[in-house]
Structure formats: structure tokens, C-alpha cells
Amino acid sequence: MGRIAILLFSLLSTDTPVVDNYNSDFHKDLHLFADTSVRKSYKSSVIITAFDSNQKSNMGSGNYFKVYRKKFILTALHVVEGAEEVVVTDKGGQIYKATIKYKDTFRDLAILTVEEQIKYAKPMEYKIPMGIERGKEIAYCGHPDGHYFTCYNGMISGTSNQYLLLDVFAWPGASGSAVFDRSGRVIGVLSALPLSAPTGFPILIPNIVRLAPVLHLSPDEIWEVINE
Image 1 (cartoon, one colour):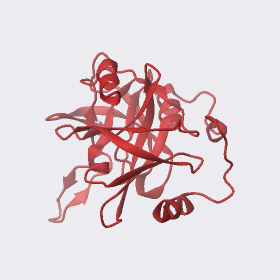
Image 2: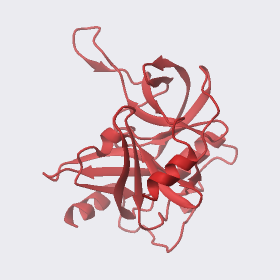
Image 3: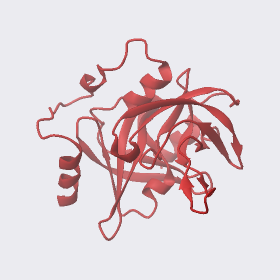
């Protein structure tokens, strides 16, 4: 419990209100005419923190979804891989213990569940597009470099083996963010930033981002996973 309390103190102030049900107070700063992709990514965004056996933590992003009234969190597997404990933090500073229900090492995907309803995140209906094309506009909300719940937009620029490539800004801490198209459908999850070494030293390229697609995960398949 000590490390969870430290996490909460480091993320948010102590005067955060507590409510019993989903609350939209933290979503009132969204622009009235913000794109659907931005609205859904922001409202469903949560912070994922994974602790290993040495109590070292790894922070990433995730998003809250529902399928047939069952709720779950989508994130990148490398955010939670090897963790002994995983917690989810919402915009109000509420913390929930999470269980890893699904792992896809090939695509770097993970599905988490929590016992309680997350109060300060809205579960979005899980819908996937029929197809994915270059040039399609996208958006995500994540926590790059500790900048919590920040929104970014870009487009699909290409493919790389089993992944898609995005032209969008990202940085460590954004991994695990669900990426939405303009209709509000989920395309995939931010997986990694490619490395380049034009000067002989590896560097991150913040505007070429690898995306793990979720087209193979239908609502029915996710329903089966979270009910196992």
C-alpha cells in the first residue's frame, strides 16, 4: 500500500474530490467541437503503473473500454510485462488494482480488468474499423514524459511487418495509448518509437511511431477473454 500512496501523491494534489460513480468534471475542459477521436481518447485515458519484484515501477498509458457492458483496459504488453502488481490511475487520482487477462507478445498488446468501475474515466464502446489506409487521420491521449492526459493527432503513414507506422508525436510514457480514427473506432495501441543512428548514437524519433493494430481482436473475442 505504501508505494500506491506514493504514486497517488506524486500524480495529483490531496484536495481531489471523491465520488461514488463516473464523473465528468475532468472532461469539461474539452473543446465543444473537438474531433470524436480526441474526445474518446481523452475521456477514456488512464495511467498504467507496473511494479516488479524489486518495487521498481514502469509507467505507461491505457484506455478504458466496454464490450457488451463488460469493461476492460487496452494497453501495450511491454508496459506491464513481468509485473507483479499493476495499478490503474484515473484523472481524479483514484487507484485500482488491475489483472492482466490477455497477452499478445507478437503484437505487443495486453488487456487488463479491474474489479471496480473506474470513476474518472468513461468506458468507450469497443469498435474497430473495417480497414486501415495510409493517410487516415488519428488521435490519442497519453502521458509522454510525465505530461499527463495530453492529446495528439496525426495520421497513418505506412506499415512495418506486423505494425503500422504513424506520423504523430510520441515519447516514452505514451506507450499503451489507444489510437482512434475520426469516427471514434479503435485502430490499435502505441507500441514503440523507432531508433535511428545518423550520428552513430541511437536516438528516438518522436514523429515516427509504431502502432500495434487490433483488427484481429473482435468484440466477441474480447468478451471471451475478459470472461475467462
